[in-house]
Length: 129
Image (cartoon, rainbow, N blue to C red; front, side, top):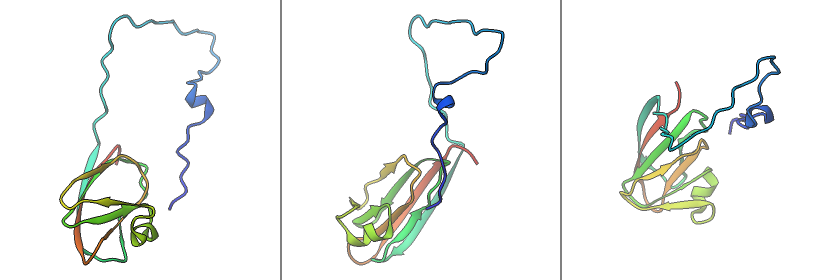
């Protein structure tokens, strides 16, 4: 896994402003405020055919990923490492056949069938290019 620091600096967390002579004008919200989620910048589509019991990385570590939807033709394990999907129930998630699973994190994801082989399709959306 790539070592990327995605933790904001303390100044970013508290939204610290530079020390200017001009002071900000205080504002107050009266009533409801409408918020909207930013749309994804781009998408990606992949199908992995005939995944074997040794496991296959279906998603790399990706800080730009907004979400990914995964669907398998047969019952499969998904997890954060090859070892977790090969071990099955320890450190892996049992994904039912034909049921889409949506994840919203940037970690890598591996998949392996419970028995035999399976096809796994992945649809990914990204925050930026």
